[in-house]
Figure 1 (spheres, rainbow, N blue to C red):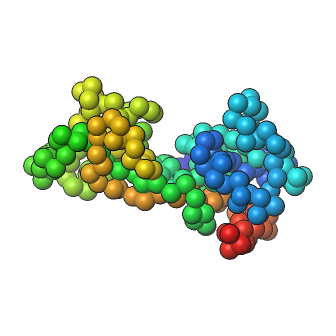
Figure 2: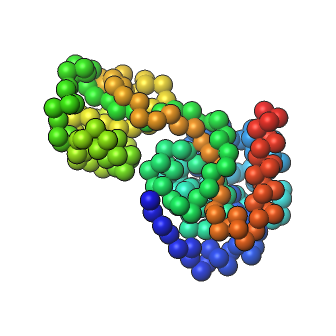
Length: 231
């Protein structure tokens, strides 16, 4: 669990309307119909990932949208730089910020956090006899917790991409990564051997904002809830 202290600038920004943090990439496209159903219409180039802009006005004067890396959405909301956001459950599990409340499962971005290993070694590892294993992952906390529950110490090789190369190049024995279809694993000679958690995207809010601006935050939770019901 990670505790954070909102910055003075974030507190000052809170007087100038609300900020909604959205993740770049696939989820940005998947959440577009939900935003439309909630009545949120950002400036057109918010969906253009070649645009250098990161903050966008919407048709609602008191709401701006920022576009950040998926792993950073939770941090922006936890520190109060954004009051609300859309964030994968994998990120919430990894950082476990107590400052974040996740009231709605949006049902988009479905995937899973999985353990994978080379296909030619799959099924041969007796984990009951292991006390230590090297794992490549961008999820060090999730990975350590998963293997610790089995009495195994996970030595983490921290990678932010190209995870599938790690076993073949001798960096690690296993990987823990986000899997959607499994096609990338298969293309690199790996197979999924365990599912740690199923993941979807959540609406998240900053707990301090929920206490200090309850009507505004509750209004947006209700609008997203209605948008989900309509979908």
